[in-house]
Image (cartoon, rainbow, N blue to C red):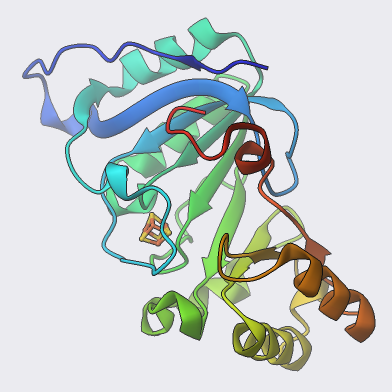
Amino acid sequence: MNATAAALPGDIEQSPQERLKITEIFLSLQGEADAVGWPTVFVRLTGCPLRCSYCDTAYAFHGGTWWEIDDILAEVARQGVRHVCVTGGEPLAQKRCIGLLERLCDAGHEVSLETSGAIDVSQVDPRVSRVVDIKTPGSGELHRNRWQNLALLSARDQLKFVLCGRSDYEWARALVREHALSGRCSVLFSPSKDQLSPRDLADWIVEDRLPVRFQMQLHKLLWNDEPGR
Ligand code: SF4
């Protein structure tokens, strides 16, 4: 399926209380996590306080355009699909993201949030499916993990590890086992592109009978990670 990038509106000065800085809003297929494969509108918020070694969305660190929340809702509705993914960057770095998530749920969307795991997720609307990263040693951002988030997760949520090599795998495996993470929510293991062979990771998971879900990012297989897809 082809993705459809939306034209961003002009940068008009309006009430700061209702605005969010947006890098892009586009229609594509969800490439990962529980909603994989669904036609989905992505709302990519600008900015991230982290700098992961494998980051594939550095173009969202800066720039962006201010959008009124009402205009975001209208653009999402215009795309005509049920699933919406709020992503970044780190979307929760903009506090008004909490209100956007609530409004999207109120509008009847199936909403997911992709977050770095570095920021408190307790205020996120309970109707949202939270996809929370755990940053591994290989990411270079291990110290940013907000471990208190783990206790907040439920069966509706997902924990995502992007693994850079065997030592990351062993670190993540120990964490999953020691904290029985799979009993709390879905646990997703992904290979970092160009750093870990997907086949090696799949073999290790099977060999260890680890209660986690292997995933490859569908949008990278289909579109080689082009922005806006
Ligand atoms: S948290 Fe996500 S957007 Fe931020 S640097 Fe890491 S991979 Fe990139």
